[in-house]
Image 1: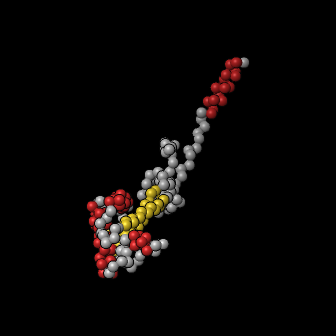
Image 2 (image 1 turned 135 degrees about the vertical axis):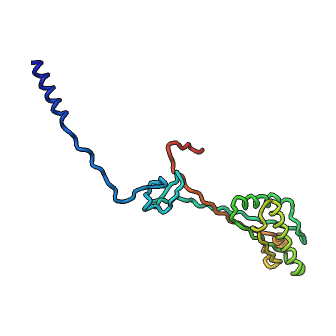
Image 3 (image 1 turned 180 degrees about the vertical axis):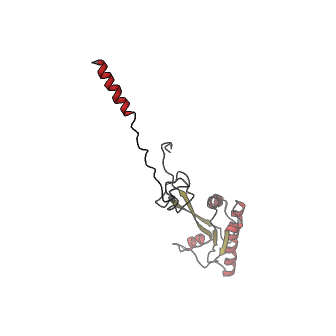
Length: 197
């Protein structure tokens, strides 16, 4: 009996070895589905061909960009009938220089003013020379002269304060405001990233 069972088992297994299986079908692509920048969007749909690695992308293969804006203001007050920058404003000059260095595409316009005391011609002279001295201080701090413009307004735009003395003090000034723009690409998270605390 054992011999019969063993013989049948050998015959069955031998019969199975003669069966051939069909090869898997080969799929042919009629369209080019290549992705040269490996961002997951095929070249035919990719509007941004050279996407940075690990960038978060949209459906068109373009990276997500975050724009940020930062503003820096300069406000320097002067003594009566003086164009000398008080030493207390040195840190303001350095701060503006650093800001302009951080945003090299920006330019600055220095607006010089005078208090409404004395002849208009003299006040115009004071406002021009106050702005020119701030210009020189910024250049000495490393700012390119090509990025600075000066305007002297004389006594045409005094500050309106509660007292005459305060109006005169606040009107002797040089002001400037610069807005710096920056853009950065959002990067995708991977399991190899570390948490930033």
